[in-house]
Length: 377
Image 1 (cartoon, rainbow, N blue to C red):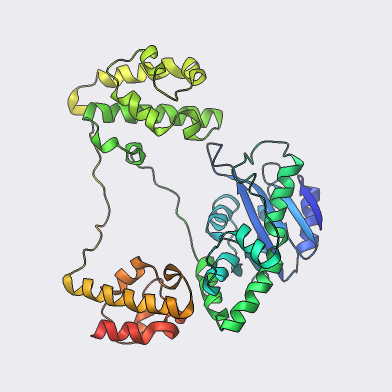
Image 2 (cartoon, rainbow, N blue to C red):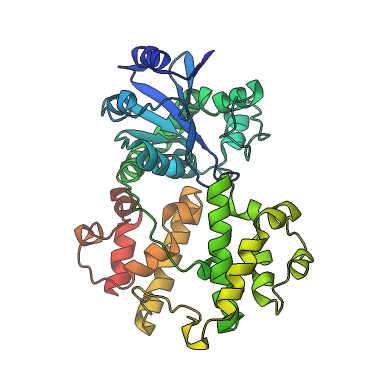
């Protein structure tokens, strides 16, 4: 199969001509979040019938050129485990596909025990997919040929896998199930992350004193500034356990910080003085200005009543029996959180069930009557 790297507008125009009007396109994205400060899109792979295009999104912006194609309701986009890819498409490229076929969803509703792309390609196509560059730095340039080949392989076999899974779905009369799930997937939208107190993300921080918590906030800000400045993932500047140990120190000497296991001497030599100044300023604050551990805001989780707990247990039995009958993982039928929500709702008809977010028409077909009996009972 022909593979072409797209690095400029001229190459991008050629790609558009090659894929425009195609009924199906396989897509995948590579991001750099494991190595870099941001998990921005670094590479976008598109495979048509006989060509694969690797778009270097750090060199050329494909948004305007690809938006009409990827949002075309007559073009099905095949992808695997599409939640991450769709979030990046929306956030970085402002592209919102409408016709999807997620091979991971299809595999789950066929009843496959292993849902990873490598496992499925091995089983259905006898192809061994390498995992060598799964956590590679996709932001580095130029990309080696081996990494480009690895990226291309992620989409080159999706058409064939889609066809084989579709055959299985038709035999099992579950094609409509996947169609409905993929429609729900296409409607997902992600809001920008709101800035929260950084200490909430540090395991063990709730056991610190107010002074130590305030020091930890300052250390988190120090790390974030460095990570952004040198474009490196937070944990590659200093891991959370290191930040926790610095916060607990009674001394603000570089020598004391340098003795902490795992601290980078290079980072400490270059940015250590700014850290010391920050810690000294915090230590000199009046105790009443130390914020302490933040209280969690937002709606509290609904606590089920005894009656609702009994209903939930009945719903789990119904779900589990359906999973055994269809030979599908329980979570692929209905999640426990969805069942818990259903247990709190007053419903009289199957139409009422469909008003609950997460309940599909295929759920009603497969186990709707049993659910209604449990709720009414």
